[in-house]
Image 1 (cartoon, rainbow, N blue to C red):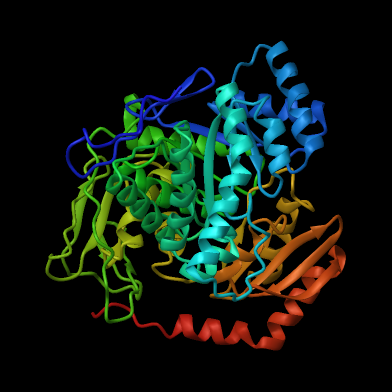
Image 2: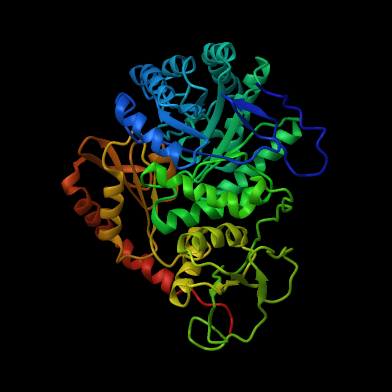
Amino acid sequence: MGTGVNNKEHSGSFYRSSVISVGSVPLGGDHPIRVQSMTNTDTNDTRASVGQCIRIIEAGADFVRLTAQGIREAENLKNIKRELRKAGFSTPLIADIHFNPAAAEVAARIVEKIRINPGNYADKRAEFIKTDLTDNEYNLEVERIHERLLPLINICRENSTVIRLGINHGSLSDRIMNRYGNTPTGIVVSAIEFVKIFLSENFSDLIISVKSSDTAVLVESNRLLVKMLQKFGLSYPIHLGVTEAGEGEDGRIRSAAGIGTLLSEGIGDTIRVSLSEDPEHEIPVAKEIVRFLCGSKGRVTNPIEPAAFQTRTNLYKPEVITYNNGRYLREDGNSYQGDMLIFNYKTAPLITGKEEGNIILNPVFSEDDPEKLVIDSAALLGRYFILKQADGICITNSGKIQGDKLKELSFSILQATEARITRNKYISCPTCGRTKFDLQDAVRKVKAATGHLTGLKIAIMGCIVNGPGEMAGADYGYVGAAKGKVHIYKGQTPVMKNVPEKDAIKELLRIIDEDGQAGNQAASSADQPLLPQ
């Protein structure tokens, strides 16, 4: 299985993972970036789950993940796997575990890979309660986790089952939250604590992921993870994804920007694009990100040196420039007379932060496919705005997509990277077997009801696993609690519980209106100054 975890032989600052095998599929090292998705069917429904697995596989997935929230679901993975193999599909399966170690121990005997979440695998469900632990109390908790992990480690060793440590920004344990906060440091410490446990048990078939719905947190966390692993002379394959990317164009842009930034730096061996859509829709997006950035080898061969996050003393508000009939136009319709970094989309510029004057990026594409242009431009340009390096954007295209569509795309990239907020930000999870309502329908309804507002962050979550945590930066949350029931949150605080779904959007709007948030947010967004003329 694993080929070792020592990374010291690799020279330079770039990270190179070890190689492990998930079933018959090698992962890491120089192997292509692997793509995956996750079913949203009831795992106890064999027929529906098999059908969706096949659709995901036929879309091009290397792995398929299924939730196993209980022992019944874990046991039924055997039936799902048997039917897939009978149908001629050998794709490795992954069981997704959150709160039930017993389910993990069952599933580990069946599937090729287990995903566990250190934030709630062995800790109590996070309640976001402030409790200061002494060093001794903290260490005793880690020892307890070690003891709880031992059965799973032994089962995985016996069955050649890989383990993914999947840490989400939104589901850190109270123990981590109280000591490190909801921060990149907390995310990475949570991962490293578990890595040390596995090392002590001489188990190396690990994959690590540290994920967030915030692209800046995603980038910072993965960079810190790599730094910590290199410090200890370790190297594991890394899984990438933006946890609650949303749907439609915004979901594609947010995923491409965050994942693309890290892949460009040589970080990442497998990816998932988490969309609030049918899971088979995720695969073409993931494959396009890999195709665009990695080419025929399926892996970036010349990584970009990570650039520092830029600290700005003044308000960061990148400008959108449009190109029309040979003229560059500012947002007010006047001609733009300043410098412009014009470049072919295949040869993106290296920005050091020492450049004088405004940095207006002007990539020149040649694309007729709207979806490809959306994904490729976000994968290329996202890093510059996540890191706050560029002062403006002007997308030009020699293909069929022209005019206002390019302008809208520029604004969408700035929105997704939170470089400039011009409309609401919607945080919505991908659907899975834990989802308590029709999430796709809920997202559409919430967007339609709140689309007239500006500058709010609204989370639409299918269950409470990641919901409260991922809503840390949200103004409001709309979270599935049970069939036909919704919890409504202000920040991380539930203000209404078990609201009938038919009434939930009305109640959400009432709470927003009572807070006066809509007007305040819209005003603050509109009052932001443009770049100097």
